[in-house]
Amino acid sequence: MFEKANVDESVDCDTYAIVYNHWPSPFTLNLTSIDEQIDEFKKIKKNSTEMLKFELKSENDAHAKEVPVVDIFKFITEHYHGLVISGSDDSCVFDRRKPYLDKTLLPLIRSLLSIDFPMFGICFGAQAIVSAHYGDAVMSTMKKQNKLDEFGYTRLRTLKQDEILRDVPSEFVSGSYHSDCFVLKEGESIIGGDNWYSQAFHIPGKRAYGVQFHPEYDKEIVDECLEDVKVIYGIDTPVFLDANEPDMQVGRTMARNFINLSLNK
Image (cartoon, rainbow, N blue to C red; front, side, top):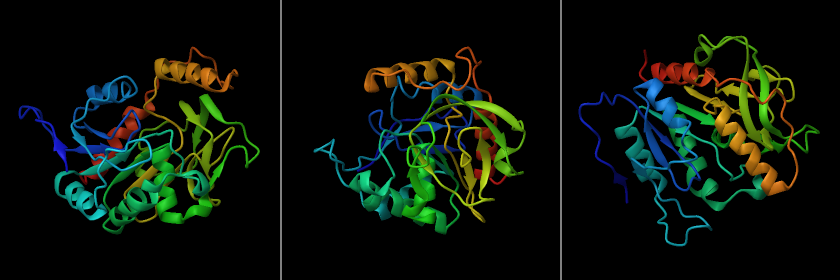
């Protein structure tokens, strides 16, 4: 049911983060060595080498096994300190999402929230966490909100102090790649943007966080995403800042903060 690769025992593996991903299947990252692992995080799109895989049943994989939520919950809580849920082409918008979200991922998130298990969601991952906690009504699309899809770079600013934002500058730029969005009430966002205000959240009383943008993306990956969108949609997508924006550093800072929170440091 679970496949776990051998780990070099010489490596200090205090924390793992399980990542649900569509490239093409879930895998994990050892987040102990931050600089090295963020570099690996930025290569997710190119390399999907797996350390651990949950085979979730979906329309795209007739051979995948459906793993009971209780088994995944038990395995995660016994072996890991934190969960990172990454981006995906899948949607959390109610009328477009795939069955595995309601059968597996959202119930899993709710179970983990109930015991305050640390979670960090990126783009789709953030949408999954916020949907599991607040319900379907929180999800929308940029089009429905009369906003431009955010493909490229977006300018962001912190809206309040939070432990996940320690040492994050008050204003920064990040890669962004989404047409779905979550709609939070006033005061619930911890990061806002020039184009869209609900860019990040911290579930009250829980070590659960989510960002709509992609702090793990560097210029190379953003450029690749833009090329993909041009091919898929046949149009030039909006780039909110100069294409020569330097590699993003906020991702490293937020990753360090999340690991410290996961380890209660």
